[in-house]
Image (cartoon, rainbow, N blue to C red):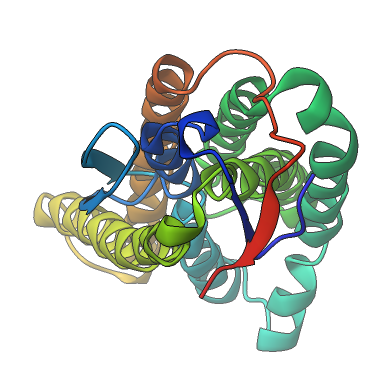
Length: 264
């Protein structure tokens, strides 16, 4: 398994995996973000159109973090320090599954099983977050979602990046790396804007038929959060389906003669 941040250059270009592998794993890496990035790269059999469908990945976690932050502070009354500490249980889960995926699971099962499983776990985490209400407690309604979604995102991060940057010819190293990074950034921005819009629209619709008062406004805010969590769950499910279709089955073959090439 190659170190993160490197690309394998194949002395024999015909032995290198197709560029569609880069596209399909980049799709997984940023599959919750709603953007399409296309780039042409050369291959042994001519130019190949690789497409990264950044429509909903772990970058949905960007909005989840924002939404939960507002919920914890504005609804549950957490201080900024308490809110930061509340997110800590998620980090060990990501670290645990990322490490296991890279060192033990990926060489045995391949990327498709891990990424699809990770997206389904992340979807389950979103569904747990969708249960929150004005009177919810952190331990019962927020903590389980942080743990489950953290486990799922850890299964997505390492396998997606590893597979997206594996087996790329040296001449295409820069393009492939730029494609992955661009998909992350563009997808994350669009995904956050989309979910914020859905949340704000849900709040407006909730208030339109009610007389505003502090209690109703608080309920409207939570309704906006839960609406976005439901959408996030659906996007993760879509990501799991598309990833299961696009990614190849089994463990990718690695050319033992490949040399690492720095990705810029």
